[in-house]
Length: 292
Image (cartoon, rainbow, N blue to C red):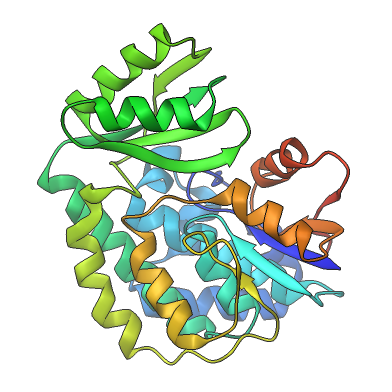
């Protein structure tokens, strides 16, 4: 069975999507639609902007979403048996599997990005990458650290990202190093995503999600929160709201997809980060980059 996976924030690069825009009339149409929805020329920033401009959450999230979805639309063979997306990529997966229209998906991504950026401005927060420790040890240290710090991204075995308040994050990193972590490094991100620090963003996004028209997808989507096949629009909406303050269970989702029959994974969107993660989760499955 063929699984298609969609990347999240952090996979962006200047020049992303330019080849699609130049070579496919369909892609150009969707870039134009995106600019009208967002109210600014996102294509110009994606193709010719600075890394700093592209790194703004309010720009990055729509940019990665547009690149991923337009790439899927331009693929000659896009017939997924199942889909999944890492954090933001879940919205790309939903549009690619026809649970959401491009327009509504982009509108939600834009609102999500703005809400998350506002939440980041309310209190100092960030994320840190932890390498070389078992998940249970990291979870235990986070729980014992004063303040807000939680496991946020279960990317692959031996690679977990934690998230929370700056002071709590710094304290947890020191404890993790003492516990034997190969690395516990604070990341250059806008804030403490997938943690209680995003509660205000979740509240703002909730209404927008439930006002949008969701349909049953053409194939199951494995969501970050539930880690299992979802096809019910209500459940999908509930999981999207919970996702902002909950951990991205990527390792567990991929493992479940394999148990459910996935034999090949194709990454659709900028970068190859997810492909590397999947190979570390299970080295026996086929992993591909999308081909147009």
